[in-house]
Image (cartoon, rainbow, N blue to C red; front, top):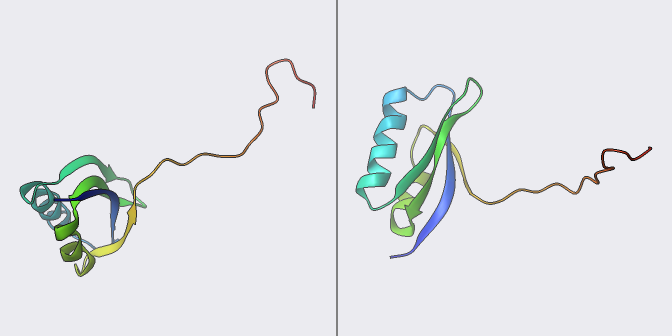
Amino acid sequence: MSHGKYIVIFKKDAPQEAIDNMMSSVSSEGGEVQHHYKMSKMRGFSATIPDTFLTNLTGDQYIDYIEPDGEVTTMAKSLGLNAKA
């Protein structure tokens, strides 16, 4: 069975019980929740989710969006500690 890493973000009006139930469902279906986000502007989780279960998530009424989890980098250039601008 193939798994992918995803970030699942819930709508602002989603009840906490729906989020908890979804995290439990991911685990019971063979996935693994890595992080649980409980911020005022963003509630959700990141997880390794079986591909076969991912389609169940996409139709959930409380989920705002799902996106692949990955590393993010910037292209900013560091000037160093003693550099002059």
